[in-house]
Length: 131
Ligand code: HEM
Image 1: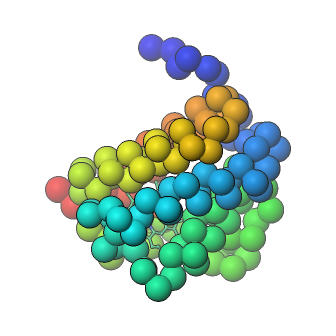
Image 2: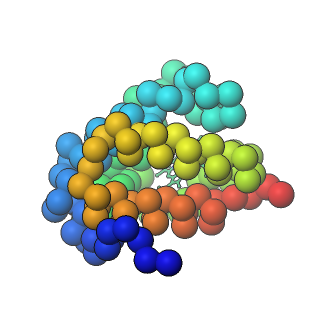
């Protein structure tokens, strides 16, 4: 089935939504973390701002913006960096559920949103590490 809008090429997302678009999306995502019964306990309560910064920097780098993430954190190695968190189907689905709400709040242009949604679904599935 065809998506409602054609996704934007990945390297054009930063051009379209800029630093501000990514920061709004990631802020809307992390606002929900403290109250989430599955994901809340996994994230560092004392450093949620840092976690928000890391995800934002990663996405900006991955979608055509400045490579601050790689300069500060090195190669992403996302499977490895997530290995210590128990990511089963429920955790994956919840992560995508919170991101879905974040998209509705952030109001990004639909083409950029389509590209990001595809990417998140793909990576969240790839990161599952528990049955
Ligand atoms: C599938 C469900 C997921 C769970 C339960 C999860 C959980 C976590 C947790 C607990 C952290 C540590 C927070 C921190 O201190 O940085 C983290 C970091 C991170 N996550 Fe996820 N994550 C998920 C999916 C994703 C997806 C889909 C992406 C890609 C867009 C992603 C990208 C990242 C990045 C870039 C970091 C920072 C890594 C670092 O530099 O240390 N995560 N994740």
